[in-house]
Length: 290
Length: 286
Image (tube, rainbow over all chains, first blue to last red):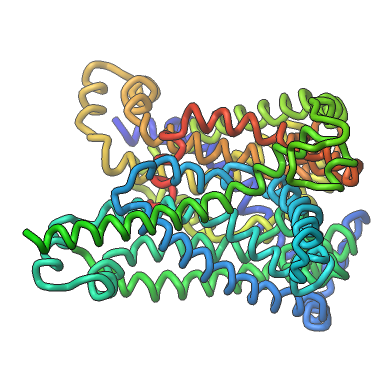
């Protein structure tokens, strides 16, 4: 019965979804590899085959390597701060206090709002509110807008990303803490483990599956940051806060060097895939079952 | 006896400290939103003078900014565009992904295996690695950018892999094949079996996927910005972007405009909070 209708079944059930997926993901991806070997400028009908010349162009594009380095720095800051904060807050939230759900829901709110709107909200906070605080209190740190100084603008970007991402990670860590077995915790207490010891030897190993997920999510999101970068700093001052994803966009759609832009996008993709792969492999090894 | 009391007080102290810490962090988290709300009601002069105070304004508070932002952003039009795109793309991807995942689970052949492997592998490809060829194909060769339907189609395609993956896991673990066999014996066709028996059983995973996909589509900026340039078609994030570009110095109006963008989601969040949070957690943990 099954094999007779297999062709028809395939057309009804599998084809629509498969078609969308192949047309939007697979074909552009494969075509993208070809694009890296042409000199297309986005307008002309002619694409000349130039071999690996675009990759030589990538090597020479100093701005790309600067932005990549900056992205690495940004990713390290964001991943570490987001996870430490979210883990800590989730730990506090699951101590059985009142209002747990309210806090959890509140912390998650920034995740519901698009990066563009969030970036603009913070732009106002940094350029008006903080400056006004600086003027009234005389605190040096706030006297000039953070967004006009390269290293402070970078700090601002990290701060906003932490604010945006941590609510999501709090949800995952809270789910992890709630999943810890009461029996195991009680057994640990009876055996005389307390406080720090319990955290290190019992809680941390059991929480590793949550850590794997959260690290993976923060890593991939931070590497590809674009919306907040665009609306908060737009690379300013003087392109010093331009992250890799934004640079790729500029290279292709503003400088009209599609081949070089695509080559950079592919390099970025390979880097992210490798780092995420290594991270998942390493943290998965540490996961244990209760 | 004494020991338990001491332990109890200690625990209470720690709890109070934890609570205080939480409240401080939470207040800091909410601070930007508070600033937006306060300043959306003030005039520019008062905002520059002091962004925090709600009292002591020279010109007083009013909803003028909202009226201005509402018209300047063409809020209703952008809202309508966002709604059409989000609802259609979410419906399409839910239906197509459920069907495709069902096919893959129930037909163990090389097409199924290859499709599933490709989809799982493609989930690590970031959008930026595809956007340039995407514009090149759909903008250059096919020339079908600037249509809502193109954006809906692309949203559907990009969220297909993740959705199929989730449906696949659910069908594999929760839908007993005996039910379908009973339906066949009763004379159902494959389509009838799927739509009348299997699809209703997928409700938990459908609600998870609808929430995850709808949120992503509603807030997406990069893909719509590449597909839509016609002013009539702009979605909310796009119209916010162009509105900000024009009025960035008019703080009051900007704050009102940003608030207008946030309010619809917040209302939905208040109504569906439990489902949204559960959906997001389920989506991440799998």
